[in-house]
Length: 268
Image (cartoon, rainbow, N blue to C red):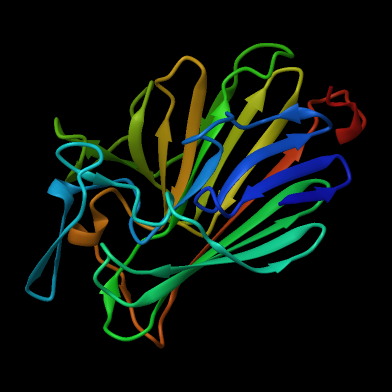
């Protein structure tokens, strides 16, 4: 599905896990292409789940350990989503929650494109028994757009989740450290991260979520992942979802040309 709005083009792939497969502005592609890249949804948890085990209401639920010894990034990113609504510049998708997730429910994901931004929303609903849940996005941005040098990140986090040797938060909140990172940061007023590509554009990523994982260790890519809780948060900081209390997370990606460029149409 291709969405168009002025100089912006977004490609949504329902069959490919409900991911955003491409996002270009005036012909400049921002995302890494290919299977496993683009920007994929994370639900009903984000990041690593310790040992692939959810402990909830005195029961243990086990999931495939795709990042041994942990499960990772939820259950909805590798199976098809259903198109609920499609328009020239927007789309609404849904994904029913089922095995290996043990609770009945669904996830919906909305995309709304304008000439200057992409708005995203994701909701996790329970269709019966309450369960803990998280939601977020995992975009893979190109490190270098070929126009003036590699991307630079700017963020002002209130804290960094101390990362243990198992790549999970230890439970301690520490002062943010210098990168490179594969780390989770807390932003209690909402996520706000800026990605600057010299000579190309500036991308401001904001979200109602209060955590963001930054992964900028690869030479060719970087990830800015707004999410509703820290890694392993289903066990350590559960947010219950009930039929009357769904979980909704939003994010906006707003782009602008660098200083001295008149409009988005001159980004090439």
